[in-house]
Length: 619
Ligand code: M6R
Image (cartoon, rainbow, N blue to C red; front, side, top):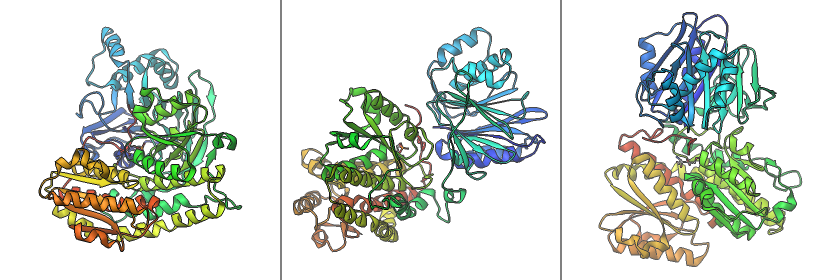
């Protein structure tokens, strides 16, 4: 969950290391914002600074206390696991009399026994973290090893759990050494300088040339070279790639929050995800396919695994894929999946959906599925991340970097990718004729313009949100694909505005939740198209009447021209006419805007809500 950046540049000491680290931390802060810290190798030895709270606290500290010029450094932004968010628990952690500094993302599961072992040899600890234990282990290994790289290789053999580690030592002013297991680390290639980061945003302001690091590998960067070895010390040639977005994409671009910018990015995110999917013969293609067509034709069950918002995209996929392909689809939270001993065969296709590609629960579920013989297809936004690398096939969403902790454009891109997957399978298995697929694709290509129309109507939603800033609970109702939209609307409100919010399948109302309705209770209702299935629309209209009759204030999301809702709606947010299955791409947008506006009205931090981090890289 933490953000990590490392840098090595010119042998002549300068301010560049600190500048690169601070810029990297700015872009990584979305990964955790409980504390931040840096350490730099200088001719006078190793210097460091760290502060609890947001990065701005560290920046104030650095303004007040100028660090001397250096040659290499490491920086960290923390999401606390072991030990609260204090200055002492912030990274870097020092060892070897302050000559070695270490930063860490992940959890060292055997740290208690290692700490006891070190304490018995007289080591004193200054924090409650598992990381400090590794710093001392590394210092001890450094005494025996030829260099920091070998010391790191020896140290990681003692560790259990998940980690990305970066270390510097005052004796080796021209290098940073890193290691990874079950936690991300990528390499950035510069000219006369090199970088390490939790993801490419750590160095995207400096270079777009990057390399992937594999599991249990150790990397040493100098200003001119990158050396990667495996756990046995053998040299490894990492895969090189060019990042397909640049630094300008990950800035607010005139919006007051990243989330608002990302809501406005959504038409483009959907358009980009649809771009170039059909080959010259008009047939759909995925990005990376290591599953034979014969195996895909034999698939008799699909299980979607994901967490949070990505799981709600999976719920939408269920409706579309079952309808188009007649394959049963289950949707399961990734962290529940492997503990229930799911029935998986070689005919099961597991679809893993993730924005970051680094969600640990989803990674572990992917591994479990593959161990059981299932094929895994990843729908992921972040190139070079772990989930696509460990999957049999990949369909990338092209939402661009999503910085706000609350997912918006990645969600729409995930839903779009799910539709593409459904149409791809329908094409392969002959469930649809080519002209039907062309028609569905044309409907999809019309969606960015429709999403834009909903975004353009944001002021109506914002005004209502502002008037509701003192509400204590908000309910969301939907049927069919409107149900996952209701769940997503509730999640957005919980995570951004810290308001109790719950999404229900509208049909479930009379089975209990209707007891919650009292005078003035706000209830959002996502109304399906009246031009789709009659019964579906009629049933939701009945549900609106039922809650309104009991005093609810109804906030209705309905298609243009749907007049049946008018008598029962206190507020109507209009969406363009859209085929039933594609409606989530437009109906969720007012709910995203609502949550952002209500959180803003309450004076809350929209991009970095309390207790959260963008990527949940620990289980
Ligand atoms: O990176 P992922 O898509 O795997 O992340 C999954 C969830 O952690 C994520 O969607 C989370 O629920 C968001 N904060 C929701 O806005």
